[in-house]
Image (cartoon, rainbow, N blue to C red; front, top):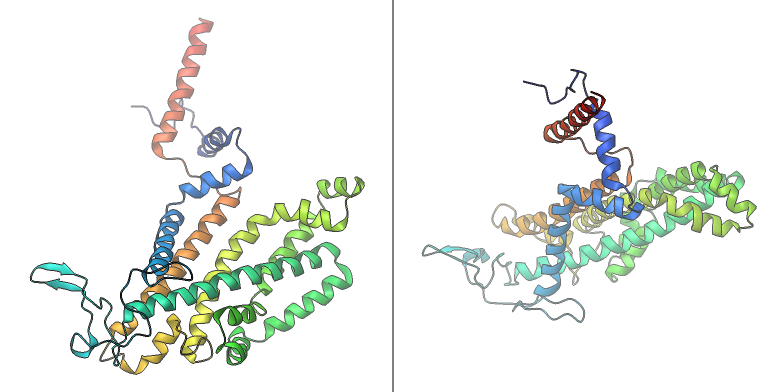
Length: 352
Protein backbone atom coordinates (compact mmCIF):
# COMPACT_ATOMS: atom_id res chain seq x y z
CA UNK A 1 0.00 0.00 0.00
CA UNK A 2 1.60 3.22 -1.12
CA UNK A 3 2.03 6.10 1.27
CA UNK A 4 -0.02 9.20 0.41
CA UNK A 5 3.10 11.29 0.81
CA UNK A 6 5.27 9.09 -1.41
CA UNK A 7 5.70 9.36 -5.15
CA UNK A 8 5.98 6.48 -7.63
CA UNK A 9 9.66 6.06 -6.88
CA UNK A 10 9.10 6.12 -3.12
CA UNK A 11 10.39 9.68 -2.86
CA UNK A 12 8.48 11.91 -0.46
CA UNK A 13 6.45 14.80 -1.81
CA UNK A 14 7.37 17.83 0.27
CA UNK A 15 4.23 19.16 1.99
CA UNK A 16 5.50 22.72 1.58
CA UNK A 17 5.87 22.22 -2.19
CA UNK A 18 2.34 20.85 -2.45
CA UNK A 19 1.06 23.68 -0.23
CA UNK A 20 2.66 26.34 -2.41
CA UNK A 21 1.34 24.69 -5.56
CA UNK A 22 -2.20 24.53 -4.19
CA UNK A 23 -2.03 28.14 -3.00
CA UNK A 24 -0.75 29.43 -6.35
CA UNK A 25 -3.34 27.42 -8.25
CA UNK A 26 -6.19 28.84 -6.17
CA UNK A 27 -5.17 32.51 -6.48
CA UNK A 28 -4.05 32.39 -10.10
CA UNK A 29 -5.47 35.34 -12.02
CA UNK A 30 -7.09 36.97 -8.96
CA UNK A 31 -6.55 40.51 -7.74
CA UNK A 32 -5.16 41.20 -4.28
CA UNK A 33 -8.60 42.14 -3.01
CA UNK A 34 -10.12 38.87 -4.24
CA UNK A 35 -7.29 36.89 -2.70
CA UNK A 36 -7.84 38.55 0.68
CA UNK A 37 -11.60 37.95 0.42
CA UNK A 38 -11.11 34.25 -0.37
CA UNK A 39 -8.79 33.82 2.60
CA UNK A 40 -11.20 35.65 4.88
CA UNK A 41 -14.15 33.54 3.75
CA UNK A 42 -12.18 30.40 4.60
CA UNK A 43 -11.65 31.59 8.18
CA UNK A 44 -14.55 29.92 10.00
CA UNK A 45 -14.15 31.85 13.24
CA UNK A 46 -14.23 35.19 11.43
CA UNK A 47 -17.23 34.24 9.30
CA UNK A 48 -19.25 32.98 12.27
CA UNK A 49 -18.33 36.16 14.15
CA UNK A 50 -19.45 38.34 11.23
CA UNK A 51 -22.89 36.71 11.18
CA UNK A 52 -23.23 36.85 14.98
CA UNK A 53 -22.22 40.53 15.07
CA UNK A 54 -24.61 41.37 12.23
CA UNK A 55 -27.35 39.52 14.13
CA UNK A 56 -26.65 41.56 17.27
CA UNK A 57 -26.68 44.83 15.30
CA UNK A 58 -29.93 43.84 13.57
CA UNK A 59 -31.55 42.90 16.89
CA UNK A 60 -30.62 46.09 18.74
CA UNK A 61 -31.53 48.23 15.72
CA UNK A 62 -34.99 46.84 15.06
CA UNK A 63 -36.14 45.85 18.56
CA UNK A 64 -36.58 49.26 20.22
CA UNK A 65 -35.83 51.30 17.11
CA UNK A 66 -32.74 53.34 16.34
CA UNK A 67 -32.92 56.81 14.82
CA UNK A 68 -35.42 56.76 11.96
CA UNK A 69 -35.80 52.96 12.18
CA UNK A 70 -38.99 52.02 14.09
CA UNK A 71 -38.94 49.27 16.70
CA UNK A 72 -41.18 46.25 17.18
CA UNK A 73 -40.70 45.85 20.96
CA UNK A 74 -43.60 47.11 23.05
CA UNK A 75 -41.58 48.63 25.91
CA UNK A 76 -39.20 51.58 25.93
CA UNK A 77 -36.05 51.57 28.01
CA UNK A 78 -37.40 54.38 30.23
CA UNK A 79 -40.98 53.07 30.55
CA UNK A 80 -42.23 52.10 34.01
CA UNK A 81 -44.36 48.95 34.03
CA UNK A 82 -46.12 46.81 36.60
CA UNK A 83 -43.81 44.10 37.91
CA UNK A 84 -45.07 40.82 36.44
CA UNK A 85 -43.05 38.26 38.40
CA UNK A 86 -41.82 38.44 42.00
CA UNK A 87 -38.57 40.37 42.15
CA UNK A 88 -38.86 41.22 38.45
CA UNK A 89 -37.64 37.77 37.36
CA UNK A 90 -37.41 37.04 33.61
CA UNK A 91 -40.62 35.81 31.98
CA UNK A 92 -38.74 33.87 29.30
CA UNK A 93 -38.82 30.15 29.90
CA UNK A 94 -40.94 27.02 29.74
CA UNK A 95 -44.55 27.24 30.90
CA UNK A 96 -46.71 24.11 30.86
CA UNK A 97 -44.14 22.39 28.68
CA UNK A 98 -44.07 25.19 26.10
CA UNK A 99 -41.36 27.82 25.63
CA UNK A 100 -42.63 31.37 26.07
CA UNK A 101 -40.95 34.78 25.73
CA UNK A 102 -43.38 36.65 27.92
CA UNK A 103 -43.73 40.38 28.43
CA UNK A 104 -40.27 40.85 29.97
CA UNK A 105 -37.91 38.09 28.76
CA UNK A 106 -34.82 39.59 30.44
CA UNK A 107 -36.72 40.56 33.59
CA UNK A 108 -37.42 43.91 35.24
CA UNK A 109 -35.59 46.14 37.68
CA UNK A 110 -36.95 47.25 41.04
CA UNK A 111 -39.07 50.04 39.56
CA UNK A 112 -40.50 47.99 36.68
CA UNK A 113 -38.29 49.01 33.76
CA UNK A 114 -37.88 46.35 31.09
CA UNK A 115 -34.32 44.95 31.15
CA UNK A 116 -34.53 43.79 27.52
CA UNK A 117 -35.21 47.34 26.33
CA UNK A 118 -32.47 48.69 28.58
CA UNK A 119 -29.93 46.15 27.29
CA UNK A 120 -30.88 46.93 23.70
CA UNK A 121 -30.40 50.65 24.30
CA UNK A 122 -27.17 50.05 26.19
CA UNK A 123 -25.85 47.94 23.31
CA UNK A 124 -26.77 50.69 20.85
CA UNK A 125 -24.79 53.24 22.86
CA UNK A 126 -21.82 50.89 23.35
CA UNK A 127 -21.74 50.04 19.63
CA UNK A 128 -21.89 53.75 18.75
CA UNK A 129 -18.97 54.54 21.06
CA UNK A 130 -17.03 51.53 19.73
CA UNK A 131 -17.40 52.46 16.05
CA UNK A 132 -16.80 56.18 16.57
CA UNK A 133 -13.63 55.54 18.58
CA UNK A 134 -12.50 53.02 15.99
CA UNK A 135 -12.92 55.47 13.11
CA UNK A 136 -11.52 58.60 14.77
CA UNK A 137 -8.60 56.83 16.47
CA UNK A 138 -7.70 55.13 13.20
CA UNK A 139 -7.74 58.43 11.31
CA UNK A 140 -5.60 60.17 13.93
CA UNK A 141 -3.17 57.25 14.22
CA UNK A 142 -2.79 56.88 10.46
CA UNK A 143 -2.17 60.58 9.90
CA UNK A 144 0.40 60.94 12.68
CA UNK A 145 2.07 57.62 11.90
CA UNK A 146 2.28 58.45 8.19
CA UNK A 147 3.81 61.88 8.83
CA UNK A 148 6.28 60.44 11.32
CA UNK A 149 7.40 57.52 9.17
CA UNK A 150 7.58 59.36 5.87
CA UNK A 151 9.33 62.60 6.85
CA UNK A 152 11.44 61.20 9.72
CA UNK A 153 13.87 63.71 11.25
CA UNK A 154 12.45 66.34 13.56
CA UNK A 155 8.85 65.49 12.62
CA UNK A 156 9.37 61.87 13.62
CA UNK A 157 11.01 62.86 16.91
CA UNK A 158 8.31 65.36 17.84
CA UNK A 159 5.39 63.06 17.01
CA UNK A 160 6.91 60.00 18.70
CA UNK A 161 7.83 61.91 21.85
CA UNK A 162 4.25 63.20 22.05
CA UNK A 163 3.04 59.63 21.52
CA UNK A 164 5.31 58.38 24.31
CA UNK A 165 3.94 61.07 26.61
CA UNK A 166 0.35 59.94 25.94
CA UNK A 167 1.31 56.28 26.42
CA UNK A 168 3.00 56.87 29.79
CA UNK A 169 -0.29 57.99 31.36
CA UNK A 170 -2.69 55.01 31.78
CA UNK A 171 -5.61 55.20 29.38
CA UNK A 172 -8.08 54.53 32.20
CA UNK A 173 -6.91 57.62 34.08
CA UNK A 174 -7.11 59.89 31.04
CA UNK A 175 -10.39 58.25 30.05
CA UNK A 176 -11.79 58.86 33.54
CA UNK A 177 -10.97 62.57 33.31
CA UNK A 178 -12.50 62.80 29.85
CA UNK A 179 -15.48 60.76 31.04
CA UNK A 180 -16.13 63.20 33.89
CA UNK A 181 -15.97 66.10 31.44
CA UNK A 182 -17.93 64.56 28.56
CA UNK A 183 -19.68 61.46 29.93
CA UNK A 184 -22.86 63.35 30.73
CA UNK A 185 -23.05 64.58 27.15
CA UNK A 186 -23.96 62.45 24.14
CA UNK A 187 -22.16 59.15 23.42
CA UNK A 188 -20.69 60.78 20.32
CA UNK A 189 -18.99 63.47 22.40
CA UNK A 190 -17.53 60.91 24.81
CA UNK A 191 -16.35 58.70 21.93
CA UNK A 192 -14.59 61.59 20.16
CA UNK A 193 -12.96 62.60 23.45
CA UNK A 194 -11.70 59.04 24.09
CA UNK A 195 -10.37 58.91 20.53
CA UNK A 196 -7.80 61.50 21.54
CA UNK A 197 -6.01 58.96 23.78
CA UNK A 198 -6.52 55.62 21.98
CA UNK A 199 -4.65 56.27 18.71
CA UNK A 200 -1.10 55.63 19.96
CA UNK A 201 -0.76 51.95 18.98
CA UNK A 202 -2.10 52.63 15.50
CA UNK A 203 0.35 55.53 15.04
CA UNK A 204 3.33 53.35 15.98
CA UNK A 205 2.30 50.53 13.64
CA UNK A 206 1.67 52.87 10.70
CA UNK A 207 4.99 54.61 11.33
CA UNK A 208 6.81 51.28 11.16
CA UNK A 209 5.06 50.42 7.88
CA UNK A 210 5.91 53.79 6.33
CA UNK A 211 9.54 53.56 7.42
CA UNK A 212 9.86 50.25 5.59
CA UNK A 213 7.78 51.11 2.51
CA UNK A 214 9.35 54.52 1.82
CA UNK A 215 12.59 52.76 0.90
CA UNK A 216 10.96 50.59 -1.78
CA UNK A 217 11.61 51.09 -5.47
CA UNK A 218 8.05 52.09 -6.34
CA UNK A 219 8.40 55.13 -4.06
CA UNK A 220 11.60 56.17 -5.85
CA UNK A 221 9.86 55.72 -9.19
CA UNK A 222 6.93 57.89 -8.08
CA UNK A 223 9.32 60.58 -6.81
CA UNK A 224 11.23 60.58 -10.11
CA UNK A 225 7.91 60.89 -11.95
CA UNK A 226 7.27 64.13 -10.07
CA UNK A 227 4.68 62.95 -7.55
CA UNK A 228 4.20 65.18 -4.51
CA UNK A 229 4.85 63.96 -0.99
CA UNK A 230 1.12 63.83 -0.25
CA UNK A 231 0.48 61.72 -3.36
CA UNK A 232 3.32 59.35 -2.51
CA UNK A 233 2.08 58.97 1.06
CA UNK A 234 -1.60 58.41 0.42
CA UNK A 235 -1.66 57.10 -3.15
CA UNK A 236 1.35 54.78 -3.18
CA UNK A 237 2.44 53.90 0.37
CA UNK A 238 -0.86 53.91 2.26
CA UNK A 239 -2.57 51.23 0.07
CA UNK A 240 0.34 48.91 0.81
CA UNK A 241 -0.16 49.39 4.56
CA UNK A 242 -3.95 49.01 4.51
CA UNK A 243 -3.79 45.43 5.78
CA UNK A 244 -2.09 46.40 9.04
CA UNK A 245 -4.44 49.37 9.42
CA UNK A 246 -7.65 47.36 8.97
CA UNK A 247 -6.56 44.56 11.28
CA UNK A 248 -5.54 46.88 14.08
CA UNK A 249 -8.63 49.04 13.61
CA UNK A 250 -10.82 46.02 14.43
CA UNK A 251 -8.76 45.20 17.53
CA UNK A 252 -8.89 48.87 18.53
CA UNK A 253 -12.69 48.79 18.33
CA UNK A 254 -12.87 45.81 20.69
CA UNK A 255 -10.58 47.57 23.17
CA UNK A 256 -12.63 50.76 22.83
CA UNK A 257 -15.84 49.00 23.79
CA UNK A 258 -14.23 47.43 26.85
CA UNK A 259 -12.78 50.84 27.80
CA UNK A 260 -16.18 52.53 27.57
CA UNK A 261 -17.76 49.69 29.56
CA UNK A 262 -15.12 49.95 32.28
CA UNK A 263 -15.47 53.73 32.54
CA UNK A 264 -19.26 53.52 32.67
CA UNK A 265 -19.06 50.82 35.35
CA UNK A 266 -16.78 53.06 37.41
CA UNK A 267 -19.19 55.95 36.94
CA UNK A 268 -16.90 58.00 34.69
CA UNK A 269 -18.45 57.17 31.31
CA UNK A 270 -22.04 57.28 30.10
CA UNK A 271 -24.35 58.46 32.86
CA UNK A 272 -28.08 58.45 33.43
CA UNK A 273 -30.53 59.20 31.92
CA UNK A 274 -28.55 57.70 29.02
CA UNK A 275 -27.82 53.98 29.20
CA UNK A 276 -24.83 51.81 28.23
CA UNK A 277 -23.98 48.22 29.10
CA UNK A 278 -21.46 49.36 31.70
CA UNK A 279 -24.01 51.74 33.21
CA UNK A 280 -26.53 48.92 33.65
CA UNK A 281 -24.02 46.75 35.49
CA UNK A 282 -22.91 49.69 37.63
CA UNK A 283 -26.45 50.70 38.59
CA UNK A 284 -27.45 47.24 39.74
CA UNK A 285 -24.19 45.95 41.21
CA UNK A 286 -25.73 45.89 44.71
CA UNK A 287 -28.40 43.44 43.49
CA UNK A 288 -25.97 40.81 42.17
CA UNK A 289 -26.90 38.23 44.82
CA UNK A 290 -30.66 38.69 44.66
CA UNK A 291 -31.32 39.54 40.98
CA UNK A 292 -28.42 38.19 38.91
CA UNK A 293 -30.33 38.49 35.63
CA UNK A 294 -29.58 42.21 35.75
CA UNK A 295 -25.94 41.22 35.07
CA UNK A 296 -26.30 38.16 32.85
CA UNK A 297 -27.64 39.91 29.77
CA UNK A 298 -25.47 43.05 29.59
CA UNK A 299 -22.43 40.89 30.40
CA UNK A 300 -23.38 38.42 27.66
CA UNK A 301 -23.66 41.17 25.06
CA UNK A 302 -20.34 42.73 26.12
CA UNK A 303 -18.49 39.40 25.84
CA UNK A 304 -20.22 38.46 22.57
CA UNK A 305 -19.43 41.72 20.79
CA UNK A 306 -15.83 41.87 22.04
CA UNK A 307 -15.15 38.25 21.01
CA UNK A 308 -16.75 38.72 17.59
CA UNK A 309 -14.68 41.81 16.82
CA UNK A 310 -11.50 40.05 17.97
CA UNK A 311 -12.21 36.96 15.85
CA UNK A 312 -12.91 39.17 12.83
CA UNK A 313 -9.58 40.92 13.46
CA UNK A 314 -7.80 37.54 13.59
CA UNK A 315 -9.41 36.54 10.31
CA UNK A 316 -8.40 39.80 8.63
CA UNK A 317 -4.84 39.41 9.94
CA UNK A 318 -4.57 35.93 8.43
CA UNK A 319 -6.17 37.10 5.18
CA UNK A 320 -3.81 40.05 4.68
CA UNK A 321 -0.65 38.17 5.74
CA UNK A 322 0.88 36.45 2.68
CA UNK A 323 2.87 34.17 5.00
CA UNK A 324 -0.34 32.66 6.34
CA UNK A 325 -0.98 29.63 4.16
CA UNK A 326 -3.63 26.97 4.40
CA UNK A 327 -2.24 23.64 5.62
CA UNK A 328 -3.13 20.98 3.01
CA UNK A 329 -5.21 18.05 4.21
CA UNK A 330 -4.22 14.40 3.78
CA UNK A 331 -6.77 14.15 0.98
CA UNK A 332 -5.23 17.11 -0.85
CA UNK A 333 -1.75 15.65 -0.46
CA UNK A 334 -2.94 12.26 -1.71
CA UNK A 335 -4.64 13.90 -4.70
CA UNK A 336 -1.50 15.84 -5.56
CA UNK A 337 0.58 12.68 -5.15
CA UNK A 338 -1.76 10.74 -7.45
CA UNK A 339 -1.51 13.43 -10.13
CA UNK A 340 2.26 13.34 -9.91
CA UNK A 341 2.31 9.52 -10.15
CA UNK A 342 -0.03 9.57 -13.17
CA UNK A 343 2.12 12.16 -14.89
CA UNK A 344 5.27 10.14 -14.24
CA UNK A 345 3.62 6.95 -15.49
CA UNK A 346 2.44 8.69 -18.64
CA UNK A 347 5.93 10.02 -19.28
CA UNK A 348 7.44 6.55 -18.77
CA UNK A 349 4.86 5.01 -21.15
CA UNK A 350 5.59 7.61 -23.80
CA UNK A 351 9.31 6.93 -23.62
CA UNK A 352 8.76 3.18 -23.89
